[in-house]
Image (cartoon, rainbow, N blue to C red; front, top):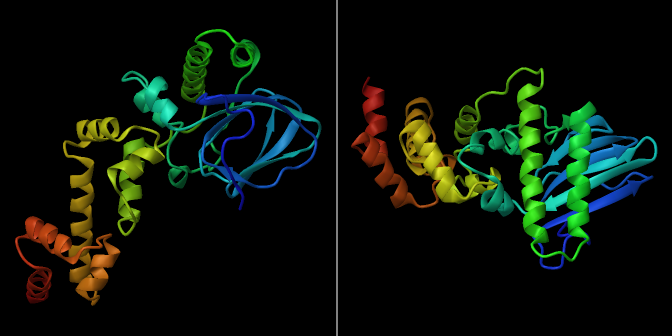
Length: 283
């Protein structure tokens, strides 16, 4: 699978790029390391994102997570605007305390998305005209040599995100589960994987310190303490209900250091794994 880095429309030292494209033929499935917002100006196409396919037409906005594999297959002459930027741009200039949780609903992990549609939204009427005006203004700034053009573009991007979040809130669809419930489920299902603060924060486009702070506000414990506790609880269940060796259990709970596992297990249970297993068998 080909992974694209910045395309030609991003450059000149800027953190954000904008392109207007006309596509007549199908493109190859590909992925890239930046975020992409696509607004459909005219025509129709089938959009493929990871394992899902759906129809798009004028007024549709598609939020494509970095690392998602995607491609357009036009069913007629198809024109759209692409806005590209790195995930860090959200943390630096878009996220505020007021919009943080709402924005996170657009940027949840691909692994946690139920519809796997990359964040498709549809605009109509006056709202659609406003979105097209914003994109047109961003294009003018991008191609200009005016001072502070990038700051203006990023301000327009913040407005675009606000409209996307509003459209999400107004859509007549079944509300998604709370993101934090989804996050905890994701952690429980991936205890054997890397679950560091930085890796989880990157997936949701938050800087680690902010991500850690809002997690602790929600649950009263730090993210790292929560993960450690869930891993040890999983180890306790495996010691009770399976005949797996301690080394196998260590691997299944995401530990790579035996002494770190023993220390964490003792801190939670007050005993060594073998002692805990023997005690459970007595019961």
